Amino acid sequence: MSLSYRQPGVVLTDRHFTVPLDHADPGGETIELYAREAVASDKTDEELPWLLYLQGGPGFGANRFVGRQAWLDRALRDYRVLLLDQRGTGRSTPVNRQTLPLRGGPAAQADHLARFRADSIVRDCEAIRPQVTGGAPWTTLGQSFGGFCTVTYLSFFPEGLKTSLITGGLPSLDAHADEVYRAAYPRIERKVTAHYDRYPMDVGRVRRIAEHLLDHQVVLPNGYRLTVEAFQSLGLMLGMSDGSHRLHFLLEDAFVRTPAGPELSDAFQEQAQALLSYAGNPLYALLHEPVYGQGTRPTAWAAERVRAEYPQFDAAKALTDDAPVLFTGETVHPWMFETDPSLRPLRETAELLAARTDWQPLYDPARLAANEVPVAAAVYHDDMYVDAGHSLRTARAVRGLRTWVTDEFEHDGVRTGAPRVLDRLLALARDEV
Image 1 (cartoon, helix red, strand yellow):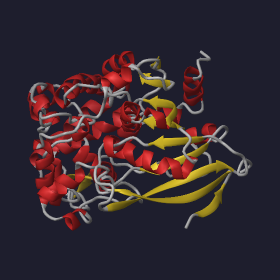
Image 2 (cartoon, rainbow, N blue to C red):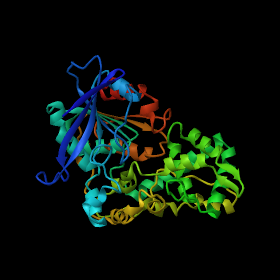
Image 3 (cartoon, one colour):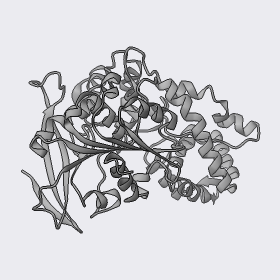
Image 4 (tube, rainbow, N blue to C red):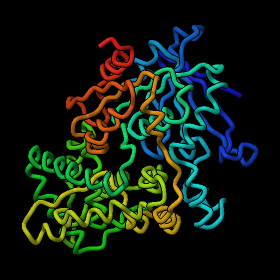
């Protein structure tokens, strides 16, 4: 039963769908998907085209907007919007340490999780599209990993698409995870350098925290073991428009004086655990490298292996060399499944996913080369999360895809640059620029 309710300027409707767990076995087990329909409150009776939003991640449910926030305000001028919780996220049969044991042991869990990549997500979209649009193609807006899903959609079900808009999410069609991270670590280093240029006082603060963590065992209130590598991973924030500023504020009051000497403050620890914990989005950690898996070559903890090629990220070495301690960025490592209590029960499952050698293809280069769907993509010039070089190579491989390359925004430009980013992409897709 669909339930509608109002927020300022918008009418929302809860939508529920049933889809096959394995689309190759349509008569087998099913799972439930959830999506939130949004329409402008003054257009509820209008016949509007549909826009499907594909969230970034992997592993995050769709935005929980209040009213007409960010890009949604611009989209509601022209569309009914479907905010889909991709399978395993939000209210769409969530997957985590609590639910995965229902599948069985680690091997069964890994097999189950292999059905939660972009290929299954776009098949879900095609399964629900007739129920939403009556069979008409819809426009998609894919942010980050949602853009990866969009390219998969264009590869296998272009007939379901009227127009596709992508923000910070054009993937390489053929790069192995190793190549993805060899491109990523230099970008991460540039972002850290820019942060230290902006906040030079943070160089000493970070060194002091790193020294403390190397000399002390710190367990955060939720049971997370704060190692120096875990602390470095807070650099994930640096790819967002306000991330450098938020990181600076986190660092500036890290220590307090106690009878036992300086300790990391409760305030710092509380904020750090909220930033580091994967309790709310474990699929991000479990599937982050598998989203690059195609063919028989395992991902095999690519970010961890490739990091060894960049010794400047070794905190102990940096302290010895009197060099700045570098943060890391969007990388997932095996030690996270030891430090994070929400991931510890899933360590063996993660190892099996890292060793997997039977990944299905996610893209069809021949189909993309013959693409007829209007596609426009924002490529952020020095995006920390998605390599611009890889994105532009893919853009050239997709027939008719038009790009807007900009350094005005960071990876979250669709949020911070709304409505301009969406206006620009719509104009590009309509060949008005």
